[in-house]
Length: 292
Image (cartoon, rainbow, N blue to C red; front, top):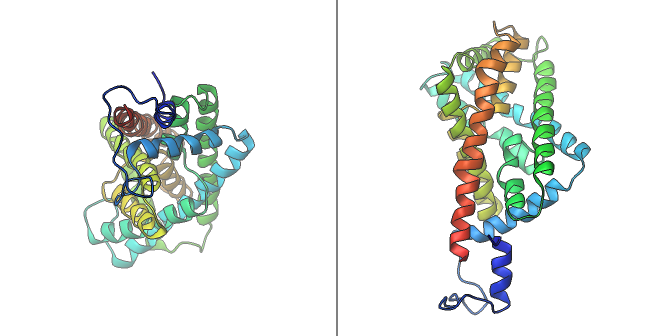
């Protein structure tokens, strides 16, 4: 099977298959794109970025992911403060839940504009690079392992610092603890399916940011996806872990075993299914079909 890049090069050299008409273009050599890049262009751009990411050293992966684990944790703190300001609980459909969801994406803004990374950001870009034969499975495995571990370490350091006495008032601390207790008590299937949606949305976020043009639309996309993850109570392997780490240090009756068995494992597997299968592979097939 030819890659999207190979198909595009073939067309540019005049090797378009018989019976396939040339695309209609405007005077500047390309058609109008009111909604940003088309699927094959998004995949090609993503594969190029993913190839560079795969070629980085493990130390570069580690530092970038460690910063990412700390950066995204600011969203959880903002969410807890905002929810506590209006009263109610984050774990249910309340005004506090809505306000917290609207505050949470500040962590995504810090993460993405600051050029750090989450584990789930390494689904679409590097997997596309591997599919386009611009990287190897071994490189992908190294990237995934290092980014996940260092995301969690970054979240652990943040949790240790933010839980020091006097840093969080009682109300936002209670919001974090109640939310974490809720997340470790999901039934296994519920935790897994919620994680599918989290991985789906996070990988879709990467796709949309590549397709969109301009800082304004990109910020709107970041805010919309971040808020939706909180509103749906979806289960992200790093974000949920960071919230649970904070809750443990704040005194919630949660053990490391509770987190690992009831949240981490279903979140990890669900995120991979949602991000790799529901977005990356299906979008790659879509792009392949449009290039033929």
